[in-house]
Length: 237
Image 1 (tube, one colour):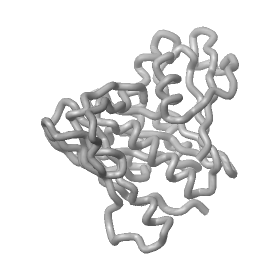
Image 2 (spheres, one colour; image 1 turned 180 degrees about the horizontal axis):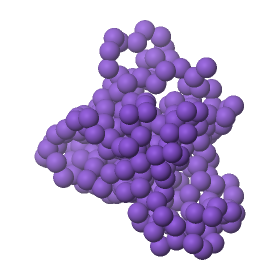
Image 3 (cartoon, one colour; image 1 turned 90 degrees about the vertical axis):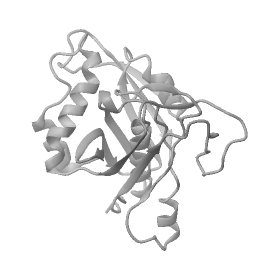
């Protein structure tokens, strides 16, 4: 049985001219550009001077080595605000409307070839009954979401989505990291995803995160108004 997902808090802070902080909390000696996710999980290049503070699990300090590894600092970057706190947690039934809103808003860019909305309350509810959704929450509002499934030693994520007004904060990358951590703790040895070939901005972004294309095939889904080729990718965990 997969271990419980630790509740985490993500704190994003504006530092002005401070030098960037590395993933492990050490300040980099040279300025660099950070990459975060856009509303649909795509890339957004951010100035290095807008650095971030960390997330860590809420509650008592873990004692086991595995639990300590789950506390690794996660840095995020914010460009258009001062400071806010967002929490990454496992979704429940009360989050269904928020997840539907965020996913449909983020996948609005697919209107050119998709019939109707990306998802519905019925679909999200059914997925929640057997899989996991992770969400980021700020002031009681869902700002980002991702669907995660574990099948034996294989992890899968989909519907990675960030609300328009929360773009550029790195929430998509934060959720993807959390999804990978969840699958790794569940015993998965690789992570998989599928995306439309038309979403050309996503494939290079996933490749920068360690994913590689394994196959491309035509979609058989009736959700599309024309033939779409689906790109399958995977990454070792």
